[in-house]
Length: 352
Image (cartoon, rainbow, N blue to C red; front, side, top):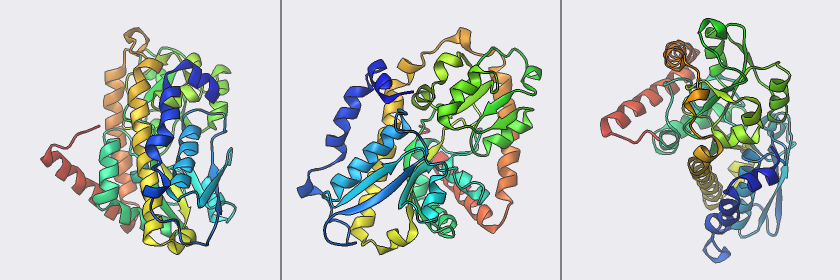
């Protein structure tokens, strides 16, 4: 979905034009500029989405502007859109930073799924995820995994706490799901297979056309903004009433590790602060525009929503347990998240 159409179709325009002033303090109040070199430092930011795509592309643009402003304009991030594998580009030295789904490294190690968002009820809400990563022990574990690949990961955006599993037609029975193809990300692909679905992963710009051609019948991209930006709402008018990745998916800013290690603590804090701010802004936008972009409509919801939701929980528990048993690192990550969940439940932490 083209950004201009998105802005015309919603009230997001006012929010987007107001964000830079709120997210980017004046130069006098900004932290010290990165101690890489004197003068302007140009960095390449690799992004999977096309520049015209609303949602993730806008988040990447805003994050780039925030980093530039917070650095006192000593840093200039040049976005490179439509990169097939942004994190691979960083690892190869073709980019300095990548803005991508936190599941982008799942093929390297299944432990990365814990930082993107687990399927069913196995994971954390977006705000709990940020708490676990930032102060609950998750960051050190994530750094350990990503450090082996030459990357420093930072939570940088989120698709929202309420995922939409959209479909081109109404499904009236669990049996009718068998053989249908669903676009989905992360460990939820294994959940989909456990439910008898075929799991696929298509570029955002090609997904709507594939659904129109009947090649894909279901798609789960996150919340209303990402679903709208991917062009799903006109071609997939039915909603399952539940989701595979119930709590949505996180996106990350992956920094080339040698670059990160070369920064002084002030510059590292500046990058982390810009990413954390964008994480909160993306959640706020989803909350503000979800019901406008995708109003509640019971007649469009599958009658098997409750039955499907129960099946998702059962399969997701088995999939996550298997991932946790992969190796010692996976077990440490799983134990840390479980301990955090127990502490959050005991303290009555908010679930959104």
